[in-house]
Image 1 (tube, each protein chain N blue to C red):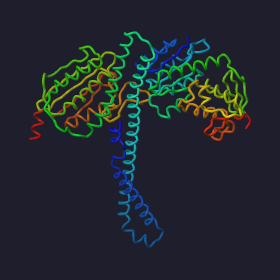
Image 2 (cartoon, helix red, strand yellow):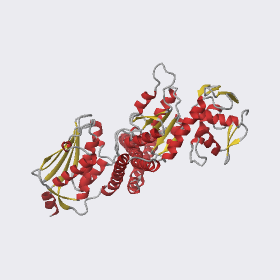
Image 3 (tube, each protein chain N blue to C red):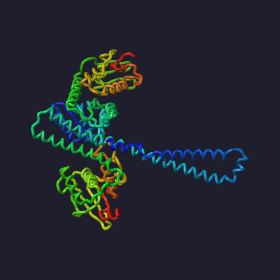
Length: 237
Length: 319
């Protein structure tokens, strides 16, 4: 049974989300404080992982806000997929969340069906990645080397670890190197959501990837935006 | 939100004073520069002519310099104040958004759940109860925002004689029901009946806000003492004392300010918009009364005392 940690301080929302996730067959725990959540997410001594399959994370929390929680999680080497829930819905919130290392976001109020689909999507991606997935195991883009089994990218500036969805997006682009990959295709294949979904997640992930693989992210030589069409990765630039 | 928003816009506050002060300071600076150039001129003839005036010039020069420094200090203070208001405003937008969107998100979630799942009757009843509470919360936030706009800097339009003691007891009952508290959570001490002149709706809002805060900032056990009494000078007092989280001395001067909340909104520890006490103060001011807050420190409870002119005092003044 997949284990989901719901970090939400609003009792009504937390109860409602827990109720629905449990009906879907997940093992759910609710925590209402950012600092406590971090402690709960830390791996128990002697174990490889922390036992969580997914974290649903609110932004406005007592103790420590959601951005900081995900930031510290990633810094501590915890790459459990994180779905952020934000009530403010400001564009900068979304950007902040994704930059801090969240894998997806949903603004409140949300549709229950959308929430369940996103949760399922993130979990399926994770299982897929665990089993090794399909496609290449390693790739080389310009001066950087990517290992899709460990999510590690060796750059001239050092080794960077990608989150699950970053790795999946990069893999999709590598598999289609030289070809334009549309935003709709990315949403469908990486996020597992409807291609019509209104989200800035893709643009933000592209920016994050550029920061990893490009020498100068402002003037990309490998990962190009093709206006109105999508993105194209050029292996040798 | 637009109602409150229009009042918040900095554009409405007088700007010309800042501009006048800035221009004045620039003129002073220019005058000082010119005078200094003349005094320091190497021309001996001018020097001899000015010799007598030297001390006068020094005196006025120093005076202008002091003026310049004082002006700069004042500008820095005003600037800091403006920055702080800005921060509070953005915190407020954050808080109101959160307070409006959270119950809406919850209502939507429960509606979706009811629609999507086949639930037993008892579970459905639970959900209806939750949804009702969300609606109450939404309603309270909307009222708060509207009240803040309505009672700001405005005297009571048509004051009527009313019984403050009875109004207070009614507010206690309302709060008790809203938070489903036991009888002993509130202890009412004081007179049976005490007449004041005022706007019943506005005063009820103020008293409810005070009681609401007392409950919200109480720890696990809610114990609130409410007292209403009149004194010899024709003044009427209402005191609300809780045994909750209290506050440090540093917070006291600011709690009645609009949008004031403890800490950052990103790390919220309680519900609210930072408007409650601001509304209380506005209402009290509109009634030509006053409000005071005391707290012995964090975790040692808070006491709010509201003072209004009594009916007799009010009549004497209007006569």
